[in-house]
Structure formats: structure tokens, C-alpha cells
Length: 162
Figure 1 (tube, rainbow, N blue to C red):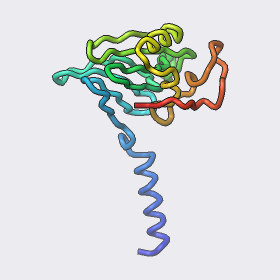
Figure 2 (figure 1 turned 45 degrees about the horizontal axis):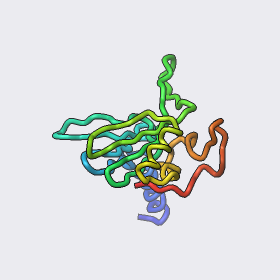
Figure 3 (figure 1 turned 120 degrees about the vertical axis):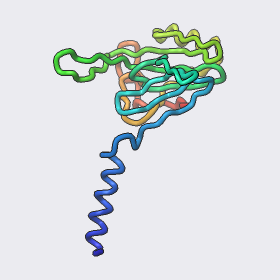
């Protein structure tokens, strides 16, 4: 096989593996106690609970960030609507906060930012933990915004992701 043929074959293979193949970047992360984060595609990112093969979505699309500490999981969600006329997914211009008590199997949300901050403070969870996207390609609307929805920085914070 000639050098040019090898380069062309390598390029085509790389394109297929990196962008064309279904499911190559999909993953499920075990968050503990039966809870999972599923990243199925660009707009299908959820947190669900599974027991005995039965799964229930706890925080629906689109989970843009999450963090797990001890018995608790916190999540930041940008809700989506399906446009009734052309089936496009539309991201809403608002953010929701969720708190999951994994031991007691309870979820609280959607919460406003003020409610969320009060709850995590009482649990000892740091404020900036939801400043990092859960995966690449998520909308950046919910990151580093003030109450009026205006940008407050680069969009990426010093927060952590489980």
C-alpha cells in the first residue's frame, strides 16, 4: 500500500471513529446508590435511578452539570422544549437546580438558584461545583451568569465535576 493510500485510509478511519459512528462518545457514569448520569448524545443527558432493571429519570434533559458529594447529587439543568412546527429542540433561557438525596431516594427540584444555594450551604456542598460542564457540547447559557442572564466571565469556572 502506498504512502498516500495509507494517509487517505487513516484520515477516513479517523473521521468515522471520531464523528460519524453512532455511540462512540456515549457513556454512563455510576454516581452511586443506583443513580447514573447518561450522556447519550448532544441533547440527551439525564440523571436516572435504576433498581432491579427498572429505570426512572430523576433529572431530565438537558443536564449541563452535576456534582456528587457523599449521599447527595446536585445538578444544573437547562430545560428543553420541542418546537411543535418543525421538531427542532429548543433550549429554554432559564436554568434549574436539582438536589438528590441518594440514600433516602428523594429529589428536590426544580429549584431557583436562591433555594439551591440555601440547601447546599446547609449540607456543606461548595457553591461553585456546578460551574463545569458535564460533557463537551452542552449549551453554556447556565454557566457564570448573573440574575439577568448576562455573562459574568469566560463561561468556565473553577467548579468540579464528579
